[in-house]
Image (tube, rainbow, N blue to C red; front, side, top):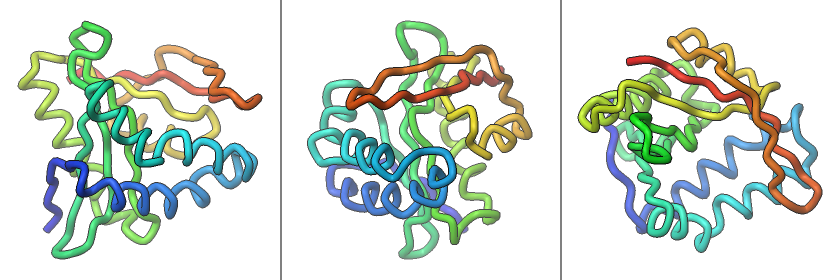
Length: 165
């Protein structure tokens, strides 16, 4: 049974561990090792995680099965003062793929979005990420493209995807 819990700062090391485990297989064919290392540090250092939670208002959740954490997500209701919930991150350990972890995380965020009267989920995903097909399968549609300069000469080349609830 997969349980979803709200993460707090005591879970940051778990979130970092999952990110560092999932990113190389997820992005190894898409991004250079240098960009992966840069982005992991930029997004998952302890100060970066603290900034996301305490300054930007992101909420992290973890998927747990018994004593093992299998994945995490981060979301923000009322994104940019719109009736949308933004999914900033969602990663599942490769060993847990196919167990319904991603669906459980998405289901939790979906219910939370509805409680906030947010009829739309939105997310960004790398245009070359295999997850694009997963998102389309569960009802997301590509609504735009975005290139984001993240510094150090690196660019995030994303699709913007929305799902109506």
